[in-house]
Image (tube, rainbow, N blue to C red; front, side, top):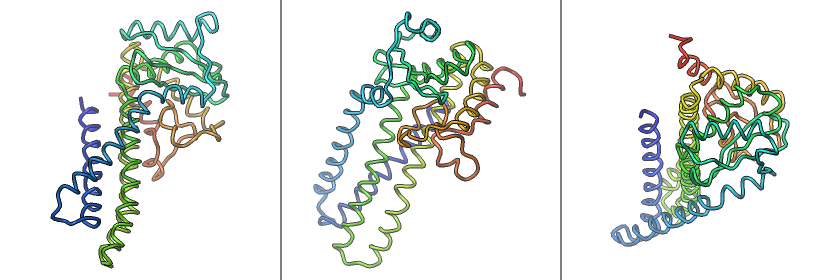
Amino acid sequence: MGYIVRTAALFLVLMLIFMGIGYVLWYFLFDPDDTNSLLLIMGAFIALTAMINLFSYFFSKKIVLKAHKVKIITRADNPRLYGIVEGIATSARLPMPQVGITHNPTPNAFATGRNPKNAAVVATSGLLELLDDKELRGVMAHEMAHVKNRDILVMSVAATVAGAISIMARFALFSTFRSRDNGAIIVMLLAYLTIPLAALLIQLGISRGREYKADEAGAKIINDPLALASALDKLENGNRREPMLRENPSSAHMWIANPFGGKKGMTSMFSTHPPMEERIRRLNKMAGRIQ
């Protein structure tokens, strides 16, 4: 329940930022007493955001699978992976998703699709070579937890709203030039530099929270937190040795492990994933190893 409350709170902050920038646009571009203009601006940006979200909702799966050259498999193609996913789907009471493999030496996995009935879970060839059956089961359970929790939709909305805030901040900055108010221009310039960053940090915070939740839910599905903990340890080392140098940073959040290798210290706040050490610690605690 705590994950849901934190995610809702972060979305609320995003929407407040969104509305605040809309107010600035209205104030400097229109008559401040004309509330109809405010409604027009907010309605236009909300409609634009909704259109982008709808496009992402219906077509993101196809785009992602094609971009990563994923081959959708049957049981005959890879009985090991297909059978593991099928067993997890049964345990989680979820429809059987499409199962895919992308030929990439970096060990990783992701889930995509707008809902459980239209989902796909994908493993890299590097993942299949690195993990044993129990660890692979842990990773696929994590991805199926994302499907069950509809995290793909949650993150798509968060990314779209954060992107819309960046666009609106740019328009708001330009709108202040019309006022010829040097103070307002300076304030808006500072806002232009900081607000999109704040929106990005909130988006990344939502992403990290969903990873913790998927770890917990996936471990519960298979009743084996240690299998996932062991897999994450191997994935952390594997992605540091051979990161996905050609991966688009905007899609980093969809992988179970940071495809560019882990980040530590101050840079961790800009990571789409929580620290791997903390994820493993929490899983160990679930298994009763840590009091």
